[in-house]
Length: 185
Ligand code: FES
Image (tube, rainbow, N blue to C red; front, side, top):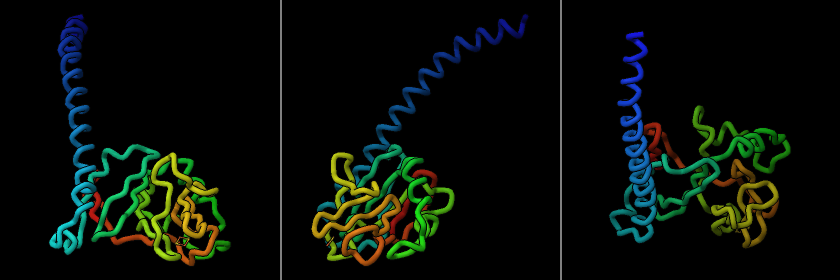
């Protein structure tokens, strides 16, 4: 019984602590969001020295499942997609031998971080920026990206599936430097 009473008392304190922890977590998520957006805004008007930087660090903790963000690396757009389980599944179900640029999804993502697809946002036909970063934009029939310039269609692994583009969306060099940070370049 003494234990039970102790637990109740601890619970009362625990409630307050939990509230505090929740608020702290929410506040940190807010900060994470700002940190995620900052590199994007900062690199939209790159100074010469920024352009010369070979790496871009991105905080990915604020990218929810199903969300996609664009960051700029060396003056070029890079798409970061936090894929849903259905999107990953669709990417893995493809018969690779039938692809124009045959590549399994596993060769286009990092092991253990399969949810994150990171590709250069440049159509491999003539370099237009494909649409599909917002859910309101057309993504084509394979749910990835659609390039309106001449109708190239990419899947959820960024692989070319239809249209004139000869290759899959290119993968920039990158590495996860922590659970929440990716370094591009
Ligand atoms: S540049 Fe994308 S289809 Fe031509």
